[in-house]
Amino acid sequence: MKVRKRPMIRSFRALDAGRALLPAVALLLMPALALAAEDKPKIDTGDTSWMLTSTALVLMMTIPGLALFYGGMVRKKNVLATIAQSFAVVCLVSVLWLVLGYSLAFTPGSTVLGGTSRIFMAGLGIDSISDLAKTIPESVYMCFQLTFAVITPALIAGAFAERMKFSAMMWFVGLWSLVVYAPIAHWVWGGGFLGDWGVLDFAGGTVVHINAGVAGLVCAMVLGKRRGFGSENMAPHNLVLSVIGASLLWVGWFGFNAGSATAANGSAGMAMAVTQFATAAAALTWMCAEWMTRGKPSVLGIISGAVAGLVAITPASGFVNPAGSLVIGIAAGLCCFWGATGLKHAMGYDDSLDAFGVHGVGGFVGAILTGVFALEAIGGDGKKGLIDGNAGQVLTQLWGCLVCMAWCAIATFVILKVVDALIGLRVTTEEEIEGLDINLHGETVH
Image (cartoon, rainbow, N blue to C red; front, side, top):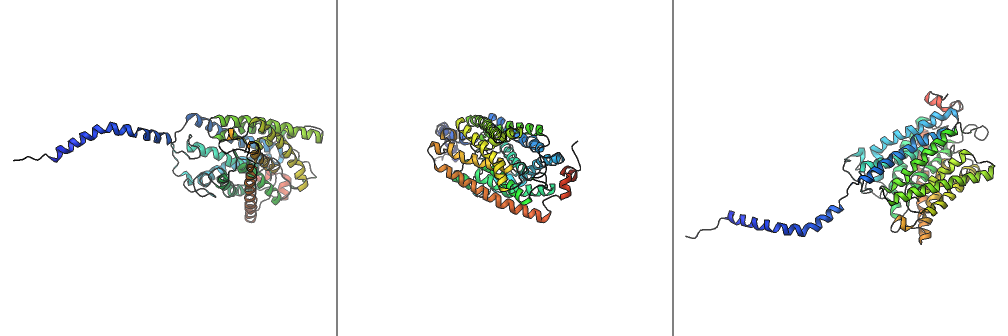
């Protein structure tokens, strides 16, 4: 009688044969497995450390930097109200960034607006990594971008200082940060159409400075001039505060520009270097221009020139070399001096602390000159300007600026009109004469 082999015995033999083949299969798959491991984003501790530092530096630019810079330039009766604006903006925009702002600006969506995947920071974990910064935790990248979202509307406040109601300011900033800032940040940095066009903006010439400057100009024109503008003495009450604030802005700007490399690398190092040179050149240029036209180099002039240089080098900081930054700084000093004096006088608007003259004009100058001085050897493949053989980049930069200016101007105007219709924008004549500190906050500086 013939005995059949049991199926189980055959199964064990097949299993033994499969085990024998495992080493060979693993050997064949090793290259693919290694490639998959390389493709998976890995958090770099050095990059993360630098970005944590940069985030703190940029937050310092708003409080206390901008708060002191603006606070020292207003009249004594309005200093607390001015400083309170910067502090309140930090708090308000931070909450809105958590709820909706970050998601609209920096998550995948359309070329016009981001998606909704990070509303209320849904899905953000300790291991989350954004496709926009693959070597640092997304929580760090999110906080870094938050500091940009914070300082931009805080800059606008310089244009309407000493006359806007605090409640109106809060409503305006909240709406503006979601309707204007978040979309433009997405257009340029978050995968939007301006980035697709090839607009170069390393750290915020369009997103931050043109945006804030144009919005400031619209605010100044809609609210009208301060009572007594042109006839009363409106000199800064304490320039020491402003010098301290400008100094904090200068130091913090290294995080602003060098941090925009989102890594501790050569790009960050070059961005830091050109930031220093452009700032120094602009400060000296403004000082000399004022010295020649008015007979004396003022303290307010040299610190304003420094801020102008910081503004203008911002979009170019990751694309130009030190020689290019020197030219950008000189151009910024001259153009922003004219913007804060000649242009303002010719147009007749009351931009209290020259938000448009410095940030609007400086941002535009820097963005256009990025198209002139950008070098592929510094910026990377295809990111080059006129002197590197790509004259078309200047036109691309111009279109990017005009698009941002148009949307910002229209949306800002509409938001102001809505807020004015609902609660009113401006304090009463009596409140403005007596001072915003006592009338809006019930406090005074002694």
